[in-house]
Length: 96
Image 1 (tube, rainbow, N blue to C red):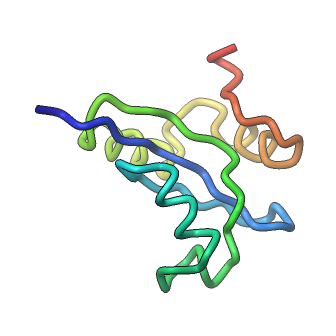
Image 2: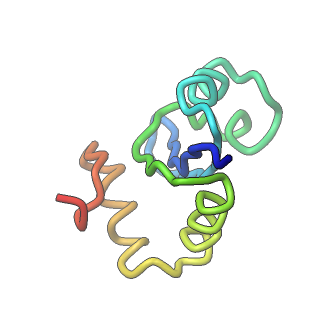
């Protein structure tokens, strides 16, 4: 049995930091970021705003996508993610 998972982007109020993560419960995980429940990167840099997410068919697929995004393997990732944060859009240009 596979379980749906999500790849998500969080940023801070100044929109100058981008965090990419994976979770199987997006609402819970975003709430944890907002409340600063876990020590780490997002708490240190105050990443509390969800700017984008993708649903994956499995945890393995979501982790693979996260690695692709972090490696810059997605065409246009840098310009798209930066533009998304600054304009407040949350959908990927290729999904429109």
